[in-house]
Length: 145
Image 1 (cartoon, one colour):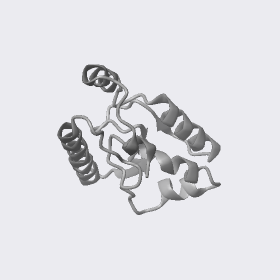
Image 2 (cartoon, rainbow, N blue to C red; image 1 turned 60 degrees about the horizontal axis):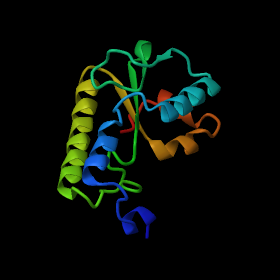
Image 3 (cartoon, rainbow, N blue to C red; image 1 turned 45 degrees about the vertical axis):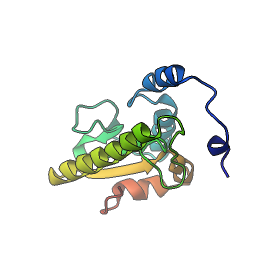
Image 4 (cartoon, rainbow, N blue to C red; image 1 turned 90 degrees about the vertical axis):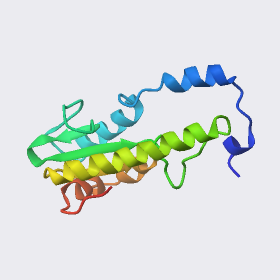
């Protein structure tokens, strides 16, 4: 059993709310830096961050119309690592459900407009460090979402 499921929250509801609200949906530097390094290492060129594209992808290759998202396991409800906090359970469950619905809508609308959408779980970045695996993912004809 995972420790986070066993241990009670050490913060009050007010403190936990303040901590969680300070986490931003964009600019998660650790994962973005890891992916940026992997893109460079694999000689993938033309990518940019913080581009004005619907859905706010983490990385965009505009010439090829490729939108890349790195989804955090908690915020996007990873089937392997996603957890729901014990406090305010219904709020967090609804929040994550809404995030997943929004992700599907973004995928659908980008694809409708000719974009290839790639969604990578945060925990998959390690697997993608293997030589050329990232290149195949990005340049394959099939979408991964």
